[in-house]
Amino acid sequence: MGINTEREIEANLQIGPTDKGFVRIFIDAGELEIPMDFDPDEAEEIAEEIRAAAATARNMSK
Image (cartoon, rainbow, N blue to C red):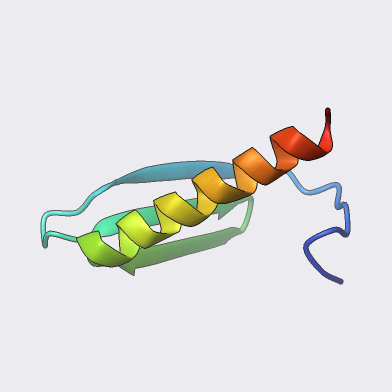
């Protein structure tokens, strides 16, 4: 199992600030809930990684 393994799992993703000054990525997949909190600097690093992955994926589809 890895990043390229497709799955038939439905999940909801929410992203937002917490009242403690963190950024929370919250994944809800039925009976499974995963809250992940990041400080703002970590959240910006994650956002940069997502942008880089999107650019790579866009170039692969050309």
